[in-house]
Image (cartoon, one colour):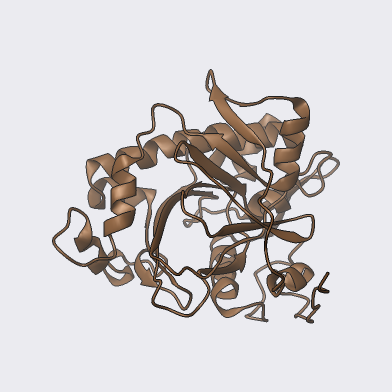
Length: 320
């Protein structure tokens, strides 16, 4: 087997401990055997306790899409937002960060193959068509069910959930809908390897390309039309790292695409507006300890995803 190159990276970079995985160019021939779950009676449900443990330890699992969520309109949006034409949703290409007053939002073209349209929940009702905003709200409710199940699994006391998640566990966090298009004409990778910065991501993807790093190897993710891919991010990993049952954040990427590929996703993060109290780590003895500012984590992670692991300036507090 080809050895994995281990390239040194700055010790204060987000991905310094896994940099060798980010530059692992070994062929990927194995499909990930991911745990499957569903929603029953408003609760996240796994077939067995072992499956539950495996899902949270992996930091990724498959979820049967609840019947109340109709993904048809969102699928169409993902296939049209980047066109800039007269199609149903083609005009969204013209909505940029300048119009929204936030550098993270609107239409963006990245240095990878991906181009995106991203809106935070506070803009959904005013900018998205009703059918897309409705899908976003239903995905937010689903995300809350999954997040609460993960916090309960980790053993974090319920009274700490509001502060620990910046109100995300109770519907008051920061939620984003992202729509993604991968430009086959570009020679770059689909999307550089990374961990998401928030607590969890709900991803709708039915085309090949997504890969996850489990057991120190990259694996292909196979997701059908009735399935969401659920993955946890850095905020969850840091929050639960000292718990008896920690929840992992999965390193993932999208390979170079030779045909146009689309997807959409929902991000759940700590509320990072002016009253933000930051990202926390929970210690069973000491309780919650602040790690860094939530907005700083998002911006720092974004730079590392698209520019590689490097020293881009310290976060406001020491990283875990």
